[in-house]
Length: 256
Picture 1 (cartoon, one colour):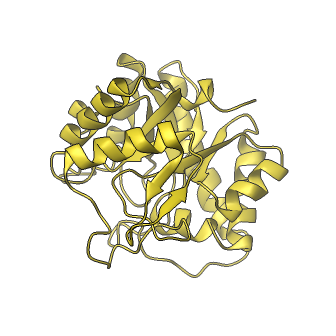
Picture 2 (cartoon, one colour):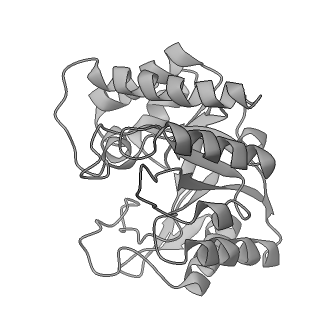
């Protein structure tokens, strides 16, 4: 049994610090690095890529809507082709820093509202897929497990990493519970670690209403912008190790 553990990182900018990247980096295998639109700036991008290389953590772009005020979690109305442009622009920026440090992008994971919309909206998924295919068809696209975007990307010939969230509650239809619902975000590191181990070993998660929901995952996401996120990362790694699960970068898990 094996799984990738990814985390959204590099979201600090200017005088504002978001997350505890230095300590979280020790526990993950892939880093989704913000590209300057919802968070991040050139200095932070450069530092985060360098830190990932130092700890042998694979690097991916984490592009979002140009919405710092809403942290990329608000859906924006866009013209046709605009999302593709947002994606290419941000992937190119992070790829430049990766090149400076002698590494390549492993993956791309849309952020926040863009990620959620692409999971179910055909037009948005098409633009996300077109951006990745035109930029580098070898780059892995991270999508919500069971999503429309994942199906479309696989049909388009892209490498896809199906993602699950041990620190988020699921509904019985396999979709993430809205953050507005009580209990939608799980905080207890031990509970999250146990959920991660169950996700990988049984391919299922208990929904917010107590039902068992099947989920096929190649990678698990850790949210790095919550208090004591590094403790959650440690708990997940410990839970996976106790269950005999090996943690590897997604490039070693997802087929070419």
